[in-house]
Length: 66
Image (cartoon, rainbow, N blue to C red; front, side, top):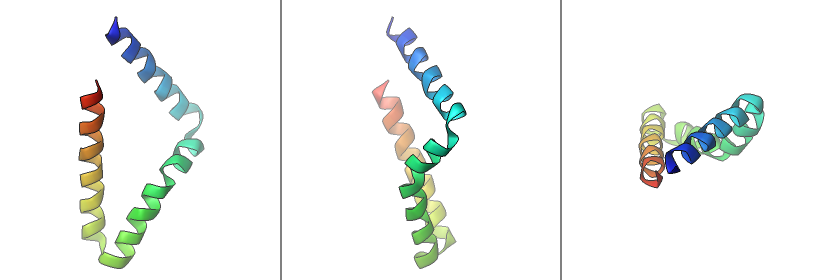
């Protein structure tokens, strides 16, 4: 039963992203501004490394909550 609830939440979240991409962009804007500042101050390599680190940590957090 818990798997079905996860599927429903996943499909609901994807529907929100499809219907309101600007809202998702607004929600992610602090992260994008932070990456832009790191890029500007420290260079592209550090910004890419930070992006990869954030993506991995976010994936781990999402998978642990399952």
